[in-house]
Length: 124
Image 1 (cartoon, rainbow, N blue to C red):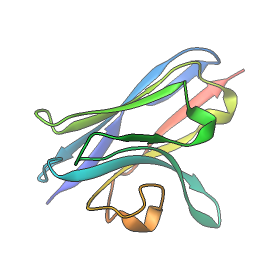
Image 2 (image 1 turned 45 degrees about the vertical axis):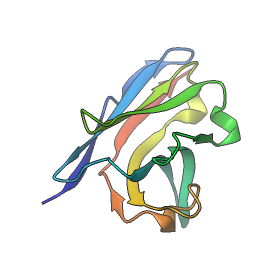
Image 3 (image 1 turned 180 degrees about the vertical axis):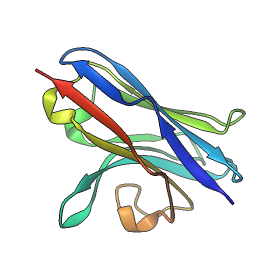
Image 4 (image 1 turned 45 degrees about the horizontal axis):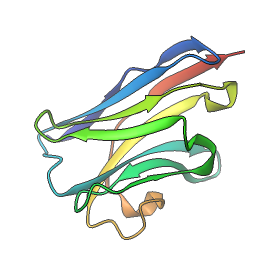
């Protein structure tokens, strides 16, 4: 059975860095758009970052621009979220997602495949 598995979360002090990984098993990353989201109680998950398969374009929510970098390694079937200059407000469970031919990379509903999430906690 295919699944996505996140790792790399943890507890860090503000200003430090973490690198999240999302590995695909049983399903390739080839031709898939991939993204990271946060939970939003009572609402759709919030978009963090995405990368298109077709041209490698990257997209970020405003609050992480200049601090986070999304990347992918299609040989390893893994994507990454490098998180620098972390802030306490970055504390959340981070979910990776993938799907083919996503229309709007920022929309949770455009992705059918999700991981279980990895917890990131940033202390002040």
